[in-house]
Length: 209
Image 1: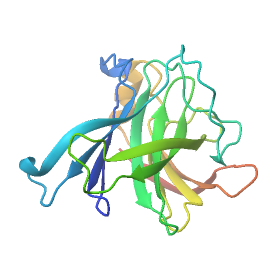
Image 2: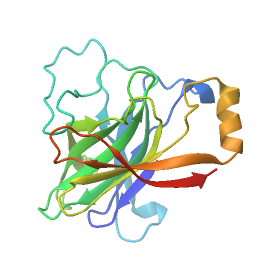
Image 3: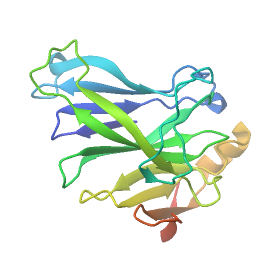
């Protein structure tokens, strides 16, 4: 999944690797970033840099406590076949840039939240043009609903929206193909990150293929 941030001239990308699609990808849990200079022609694309990678199970660094979202949440660690999907990057009214990313895993279906530190435009191409800091996460109502895409308001990032995706993502491949081939009910969830106990609410019901 690719997300362009026009105000920063950066393009962000997630990995989506899942064994149901015949893609191992157990070591490819990453976010990446690339700077685009001027018009979007190939010669203006800068090098691709790794921005964030999920910690492995042997990483014994101290857990980062969340500053937003579910206070019991911790940064992803030790999850094989981790798939990062829908993404949104926006500059908030206070000048900070925030990123929200859907994370798919059998043990953890969530929206991961990051603060993005954009570096100056005068840095060299060899330098990473941005850094991210994990700040928290939220989960779907039961933790089992598969999420697809994500968005949030650009005022202060208080309201987070997520569309429901494929319910058969962690079942066998044929159930997944059957779901892809026919219209299925999809829901849009709204999270209020200022609530003490975050309970997502359904704000729309629609059909999609």
